[in-house]
Image 1 (cartoon, rainbow, N blue to C red):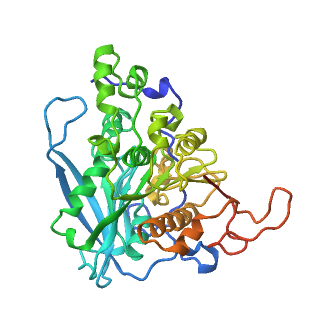
Image 2: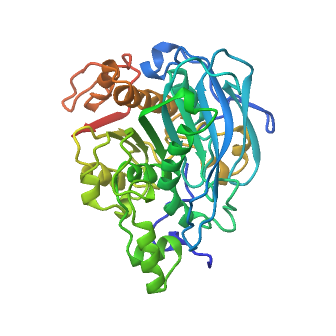
Length: 427
């Protein structure tokens, strides 16, 4: 397939991907990205839970996979990082990845590598990164959720990782695969993990959660029941296929719902957090299908998102009509609301730093907001914890001042003075 560039036809939607600051480690050394903060200044549900956390890397293979541009089955391999409540805490794990320039870096986590699981079974949450990304991009969130009693699996989406893509020479080489496979990967990982010899016994799959960022959010909306609505023009724009007959065939393969092979979503999906989900700005979903989504979705978006577009995410929110749909807006934020802080190596080049950096926010503050509201969404709908539901039931802005300048109480879960810059809309 020839090289193509959808940015020339739409707007700059992929290469900006901009979060902030590594905590002063020399380049090349394993680093910790977070500073300790007093409990009083962070949201209530951003505090670590009671469980020690362990992590394990596994590989799963979808043997029944049909690639977008091929007619025959071809196995699709996915590397997963799986965090889970552990029986005891061990030495901290290292998370090793490459940035968009393919510069390697290493992060010191809080989880311990391959420790024995704690007794019991725990709800499953799947994390899905953007284009490009990697399975550790939201490791802070995975460790946090696992400490509160969840099994959390983050996917390395094949054809869509920093390692897979030469972002400088062929930045869109993996984009057609991303469009086609995001939701399929999410559904397949749910099925694979619940049958996996190492994890089936510790997973309670009666209610499952899904958290997707950017293209992961694009997939999550479909996995929850949204149906894609590509036409010949959008196929040409985002895959490079311009022949009318071929484009019609590609559109038919793309235009699926609920993991690619179902008309109805898997009934186990019980909660979704869509972080800056892509696709709404191009209306790539059928409005009727969005209207029929029954899974509770919390949309989260930066006020000035320049990749998915604020109007695009609000379009998704408005079309998703069930009364458990919410939209959390982060004032003065762009698109990089969900990744971990930039490692020290990223500060050498805008290509790398632009994948993490936010001009007006500290990434640690954004991460704590994502921790808080993601845990509230999962606790509310996967564990039926009423107190967590109250943290979602906020309205208006968090600034403690109303439109008339009168003082208002802090949002539940936020101490006075420390909840600035958020807005919540609900159905």
